Image (tube, rainbow, N blue to C red; front, side, top):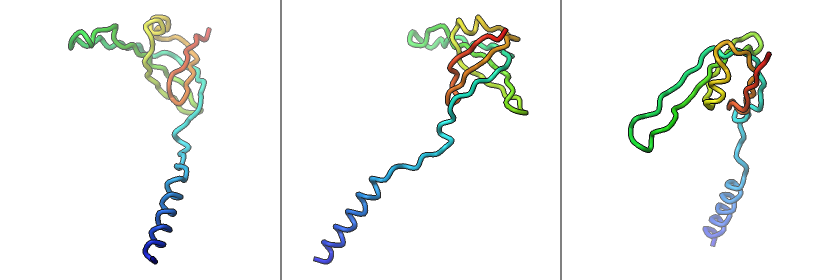
Length: 109
């Protein structure tokens, strides 16, 4: 009988401990940033030639150099062909990042 009561208390403890919320880490969500900078490089990777499933236009990248406080940072993001064509090297841009993913590129004139 005593063993049955001990097992019931242990089961109740396990249920309560499993029902607690997981610990959230602050670094998992960084929020949004709007940065001004310059396009310093445009890059293009050709499509793979491994077969019909790999054919496509390839991937387009823009490399941005921005000021963040006293530091200079470089970001490289995948962009569409239209964005790659619209922003040549030397273009002054405003980029919006959300959780370190590129959301928007705007020209600054």
